[in-house]
Length: 242
Image (cartoon, rainbow, N blue to C red):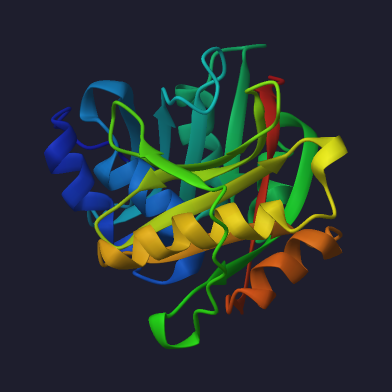
């Protein structure tokens, strides 16, 4: 196995593209490895004797967590992935991660996992969208252009909020949060509907992930017209154990 002679991130991004696709299952990894701010992205790459890339690990500073970088990866070779992880991760530092579930045994040879969850991946097509209208929903954008929709409680705090966690050239991932006392009133569905409509307007495919055991979250998506792609992701926290 070899490492690329270049450290130029644009060249490295070109080299790792064959390990990724346009499918929803690769959407998160493709965004953070290929499109996330290059100043906040580090790539660790392994190639075979013919200079074909067989594994990469991307470590990204994001707004998802100020203290724990997000790590995404793809691999055609167990040893290559483990080598890249050892190079990329500092001992005992905490990271968030997103990976294909099939890579879990390979990860556990190098890192300790915690809080891991298997999430189902949903997408939404314009033709299938079943929007809901709620005049209480307020829409906006964050300073970095991400979408937000909120419903305020009487004290001015957010009773429900949805938004885009990230936006690539093809997809935008939609998240939702509803405070405990406001659940069961359809507010989550209202704010997700508003954000989903905005994502479709900018010609991106809305992406929604829900824990396989979170029936309520999955029903919310399905009632708006999202469909289960049949793909899954493994997410959680990890630290290098060797």
